[in-house]
Image (cartoon, rainbow, N blue to C red):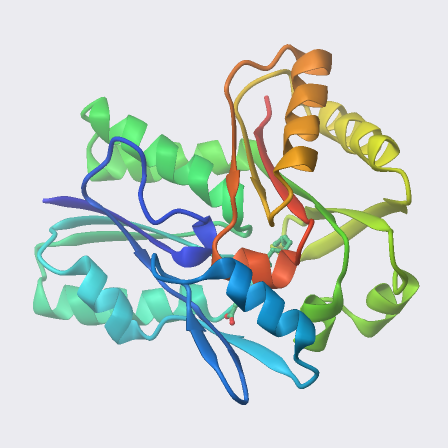
Length: 277
Ligand code: X90
């Protein structure tokens, strides 16, 4: 049996039309509470609680055991993880892979470090499903997905870097340079899978223009777009519309983030994955 597995930073608990998909949760916590990023997470409640909470908050990646449970029973497993540049999730998945293969030597497990998160992980998952639906072998999928990920990118527009800087995922220098309200921080997942700020502006329209200039420069010509948003569907839809108008894009989906990306991208933030030439 084939299984598609990702950590919950892919913003999906289900992959439309796919019944052998499992999302393995990361955990968000404070010294008082723990939120597991699964289907039962009450996202508005978590965001309200965190906004009012003044202590530190943290996240934790899935344990190898949690991955093993998700692999359960399958003999061909495709795993997509959040960037190893910012999280121990990929390392944990690789430990689980080793354990699984020693128990099931005939199985095949591919761990794909997305060097990204959210919508770019979704695009990788959708591509994996597409390749398997075409009847590709494990080895063919491995090769083709490596090629595919050379042409995908993740952009983001965030309203705050508080949680990223508090948890050491962006430097204090970068965070303090944008440390005031009503600013939009435009960034990209760097080739090393870290956060690379590109620009900042008060005006959302301007930020979207700059982002689309960057996309065009990276070879974007109107292929697939996936946009997740932290309770800001309106801005996400405007981004989708702007991209459609400029590039003639037809394959665009807009949907909410789940717990992990909501925590780090923070209320109002959007993440945009795109396929370039
Ligand atoms: O605890 C853990 O292991 C999880 C740590 C995750 C840290 C980063 C999450 C980023 C979420 C923010 C904007 C896009 C970042 C681009 C990544 C290269 C979303």
